[in-house]
Amino acid sequence: MRTGILIDELGVGFDAMTAQAREAAKLGYGTLWVAQRGGWDALTALPALAAAAPGVELGTCVVPTYPRHPITMAAQALTVQAAAGVPVHLGIGLSHKFIIEGEFGYSYDRPIRHLREYLEALNPLLRGEKADVHGETLTAAGGLNTPGAGRPAVLLGSVSPRSTRLAGELADGVITTFAGPRATAEFVVPTLGAASRVVSGQLICVTSDVDERRTWVERTYGGAADVPAYRAVLDREGHRRIADTAIVGDEETVLRQVKSLENAGATELLVMPFGPAEEQARTRALLAA
Image 1: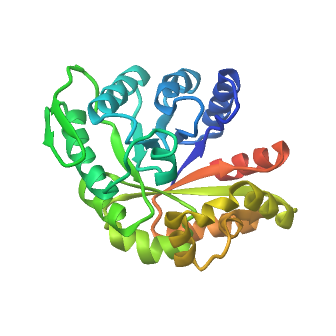
Image 2: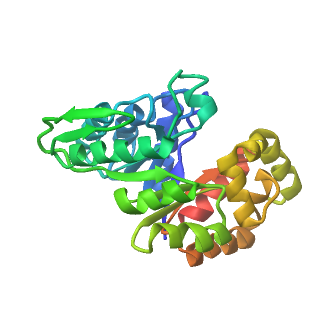
């Protein structure tokens, strides 16, 4: 199982982000991931990380589709791929209705139809071909001239059965959030298909203060349990709270739980460290090995 790490971009300047990238490269992480969370633009940030950590692969987790037309998304991804000179893993997703309609003012009507049409346009563009989609939710008719740019992999941030099936059909795999071994083995892998990539995003902390760390997770992310898509993931895993999904404990406990994800079919671990600085350092060092 490959291991990548989330670069913390929330309220963090570029000097701190590039310092994280250099440390991750020194530790041996295979991929640097950047989230799109209302601050820095994830795709635009990647070349700066590539300069700080030459040779390390790059990814986004995830860029919402609605605010970026597929021609625009493809042009940006191909530009980043060429500029960075390393494989780029383009994680995209629908986001959520309360964000797309409430913040951007776009209609969230028929999201799976939108996602299918989006991928039908995006895929040929990334291959250097023209898009010719005249759909119910979008039109994309045109091509891009980006000589020498390799095709970025396309991964869907996916939690629902329909989007996961669509990922198996039209993408290279999925990026999961809050999905543990049970949900991965019993839902994600069978729905997606064994040949596809499963990037398992996990909040992880090597610590002796397990209860305190879970309390922080619940305080910070607990509201996600009320989002229907995440509620479904929790129910599949048999969890009541978001805090129950975090991988927390000593080194042996953390490694055992990570191994269970690999056994369940996850092909890549996306480490999202949390906790005090010294515990995050222990977590990064442990999982890089």
